[in-house]
Length: 308
Ligand code: SF4
Image 1 (spheres, rainbow, N blue to C red):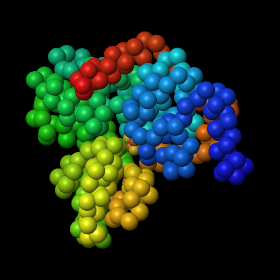
Image 2 (image 1 turned 90 degrees about the vertical axis):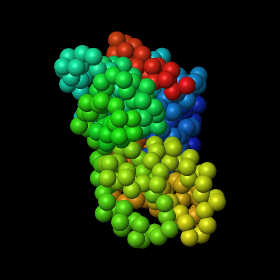
Image 3 (image 1 turned 180 degrees about the vertical axis):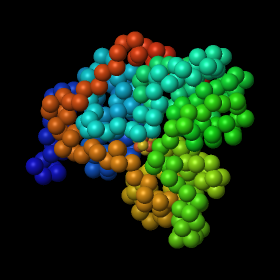
Image 4 (image 1 turned 60 degrees about the vertical axis):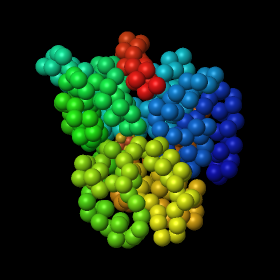
């Protein structure tokens, strides 16, 4: 099947099964082109929950499809590439978190959305990379257990001064950014400002002109790049796909990834063929037990309440 034929078959199946296709913004551009919605994981799950679709095809990684199931228990949720599992999410485990809670009975547990459903279920409140500082700020009068991303946790600690026990997890894509990468990028692209995701290490964040989630970085570029003159531009310190997409949107502007090594291999496991096969065979279906789902939803709703 050629690309056009495949896209038509996917559209046909999508209509027949009343499905909605979601693609995270780190997915390959050709997968994003098949989606009804693209963006951040929680934003996508909330959009899908607001549709009357019977089925959600989530082009992303495991914890994202689980979040969609938490918000849409009556919809069938499919992960097209069953092996697409986020290594950082898998660094956290519910048993370890329960132990930590036992040792710190007065602590409040804030968990990053990039975590398994069982870990979310052990938490008082969820956060995203967009609202993590705000959520930590809200609880800063108490001791805080923060999981699983150590860099995001440290960033929140620096910004709020909160007393935090931080899980030692990390996203390899962002954790591997270094001062050396910044030196090379600034040397190769003089006049450009540096935008970095808070999953990057503290010494890299210190050099950034703007720190924000993927959607905040995207918005910053969309809002400001038109006013930049030809000698200015942006260096994007997050997964390489974001710089590629922004460059397509603004072909005449200077937009560069901070480093070519910032590729999430798990996000690139989904192909258009996988999307087709997933819709056709209704696989890989994601299940979350009702007990876990309800607890995780409570923590997620707490975050939504505090983000108003
Ligand atoms: S970019 Fe990082 S946090 Fe996101 S899915 Fe890949 S490994 Fe996980």
